[in-house]
Structures are given as structure tokens and as C-alpha cells.
Length: 450
Image (cartoon, rainbow, N blue to C red):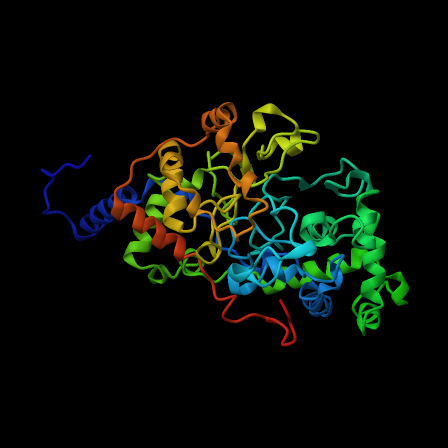
């Protein structure tokens, strides 16, 4: 490429041009092949703009137990900032549990939990992004015109219209889930209505909410189309919740975001090496792509199975079939949505069922899924004691054929990294942590009770 016999005794201008040519080629050759995969930095323009009055109202609703059937659990119980907007557990303890986060217990007596939440509580970071189109581990909620209300959801044609975002549409489903917030049949009006039809409890929840304290007048003040508290429906409640979550947990200022915006010194040497691996040799960006670091698609990782799982209707198996539970397509079995990664260091444990308590653990599983599955131990799962449920916690492991199916379905290509490379990759993942928890817009209400 270079003619080193070329005479250096040339005119001054020609020498400058030659040197510039060499410099340009050296920069080109030094640029990693993955550099074009780096996303553009997230900015405020990438997010839906929400009303602050609605968000303030949504904050109080998020931490209020009024939204639950038995008035004993709030959204914040399973999505608390002290646990990275999750709960710190592999599988959550919903309605009937006691306490918060890793101290939460399964309850006692008749009010104890009847079932573990089948999946890990997903974090709430950047869910107000305009490009977000699919939510839940199995993608059972997505933007769609299939039912004429803007979404393909478990409520199908019974989902009301008027939600300000997919985040708002998502907010209404935990409220009517028996083991999450609704409660068990016979315990309260919400739970009973939920067993009639999925949309039946929402008017009950809306009435209880708008008639509590000063909520009614505050809805009138926050929503231009509401002239009387009696007009408040589940849609306004969900829109207020979405406004709060989107504003409170927007994260766009991590060291990695600063690096993307041009501040190259925002990452240290180890984090930069980890970034090189993430977008290069380790192939993480194959799925964790784009500004949100998720392709919003579904992939089988062969994670260690446990818990009650989620499966298709009338399927008697204790297992989690992933995306197939929504699509009913056999090729979607055991595939789960690629999670977004901002603040991932704060959101342990990891995986759709929280199988791994550390970032290093989930990273190593991605690199060698089958080997990691063999080495995984049930003690790695963060499961509060519930002796009456333990017989089914790991029963899937005794089903030889089901385990074979899950092991065989794996979309990961094994990759070999050194221990130092794994540590650099973990260091890069930690560089995705922003300042949202340190400087919240709203914060936790002083009167919040777990």
C-alpha cells in the first residue's frame, strides 16, 4: 500500500499531503469493525413527553395500595427504586406477601401466597421511549391495530382506548392478575370480577381510586377532558402511572451515554475494553442493539428453569414456554424478549426468572449456556421460603423430556473469553448506570409503607 522508496525530498506541500494520506489510512485501519454498531446517544427527543401534574398524581398512585384488590400491595412493592425498580428476588412474592424486596416473606395462615409470581419483576428504566413497541418477557403486549384499540394484549378487544403509551397499557394488567395485585376469588370484589372477564375489575378499581382522599379533584385538575371525578376511568389512572414511571426512571446520562455523546474519557480503560468486546468478539450487540440496547425480539438462552412458569392455556405442564405462550407457534418455544440494559448493574437477579444473582453469572451463561446450565445450583435462585410451594419449585428438573427440549432450544453460539475479558465486559455493563436513583424527580413518598 505504501511506497517507502518514495523520495522524501519533495516539495513542502506534497509532503504534507502524503503525511495526511498516511494519517487517514492509519485512522481507518485503527477503527474497529464494530464501530458502526455503536448506537446514537439517547436524548430527551427519544422519549414521549408527559404531563408533570399527571406524573405527580401517578407517583402517589404507584406507591398506594388502593390499586390492589385486598389493599395490601402497591406497584412499588415489586418495583421499588431501592432494588433498581425491581424487587431483588428471582420470582416475586405478590398478593399475600409481607415486607419489601429481599426481606419480603411469603406470608402466613390463610393470607399466605398461593403461588410465586412466574417471572422476574422487570425493571422500569426508559419505558417511555418512543421506539418501544413490545413489553413483557414474552411480548404479550405490543403496539398493534389487531383489536382496534392500538394494542395486541391479553385483554384483546376488551382493552379500552385512550392510553397515552404502551407503558400505560401495561400498567393495567398487574392490577387484575390474581397472584400479583388482585387477590384470590372470594377475597374481594376485584378478584371476583377478574374471573368473570379481564376488563370487569377496572371500573371497580377506578371507583375506589377516585373516591379516596383528594384523588378525584386531582384527576380533574390534571386531565383537561375530566370535568367530574366520576369520569375517571382506568385509562386516566394508567396514564398517570405511565407519566410518573417514564419521567422518574428515564436514564440517559450513564458514562456510556456520555461517551456516545462525545466525552470519550467518561469510560475507563477496562470499560472501553469491555465495550470493544460487547460490540465485537462477544457479539452481545447482536441482540442488545440500538439506542435502547434491545432488538425487542425473542431469543432462547437455555436459562435454568424453575418456578411455576407461564405456558399456554390448558397446558398442564409446570414449565415456561416463553414467547410461544403468546404466539402459539412452536418455533417460539422458550424464547424471551431481549431486555434493555440501562442500569443493569442495579437490577439483579438476571434472566426472565432471575436465575443468576450476579452480572458475571449471566454473562458467563451467555458465553456457554449448556455448560452453565450443568453448573447451576438451585441455591443460586433468590426464592423466599414457602414450604407449601417448594414441591413444584424445581419439579421441571425431574421431567427428562422437558429438560431435553429446553436444552436443545438454544439460540446462543458459544464464545470463549478469558477471565480478564469477562471482567472487562462486566465493567462495561456497570458503565450503563445513570444518576436517576441518586437524583430522582419525585422520589418515594414519606408516608410509603411496604
